[in-house]
Amino acid sequence: MNIDPFFDFFFGRPNQPREPQYREGSGSGVIISTDGYIVTNNHVIDNASTVEVTLNDKRKFDAKVIGTDPSTDIALLKIEADSLPIISFGNSDNLHIGEWVLAVGNPFNLTSTITAGIISAKARNINMIENTDGLESPIESFIQTDAAVNSGNSGGALVDANGKLIGIITAIASGNGYYTGYSFAIPSNLAQKVAADLKQHGYVQRAYLGVNV
Image (cartoon, rainbow, N blue to C red; front, side, top):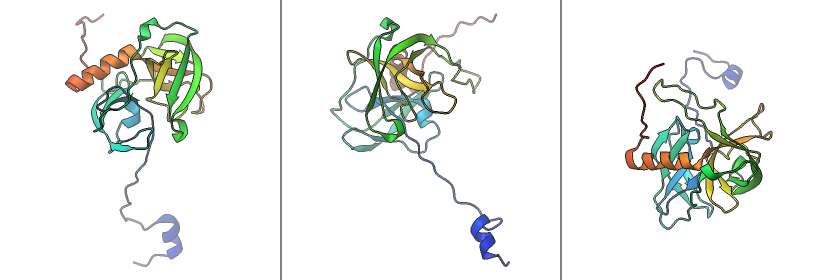
């Protein structure tokens, strides 16, 4: 079969299998234990074939996915490391509207970027988490803040003025994919409970009331 080299260059050879295309994505995470457990968003690692964690000191580790909870968009990772610095959980139920917070993450692969803002609202439902499996109900009760958040911040820390973790950054409200004034975080109390269940059981234990209305 004769192939025009110009056709081959621009369009490829017909009926020839194409090489698989691989994509890389990035996000942020929060170290919650000295032995390497890390909380991030489920959408950060969803469908990933491999997950690599880079610490602030530039050390890199292959991470194991311990468990995921699409209903809350939380995932728990584990790296083989010791004596890691950790962040302490705060009580997200005690937050007040107007309270100052900091968003910490890696937007656009800019390591350890910190932005400041206030809590704009609590218990926001933005219909971000889709119920795709028909079994679990999405749980949305986001902390809304005006701290600047962009691509790569997902899974990062929202901290209060005392440096306590009060949220896991998850989403922005934007029509163009870039920060336009509103960002949202999963409350730390919810993230802590989900992470504990994933660590102990590999899944999240929930109670359902058997009543149909």
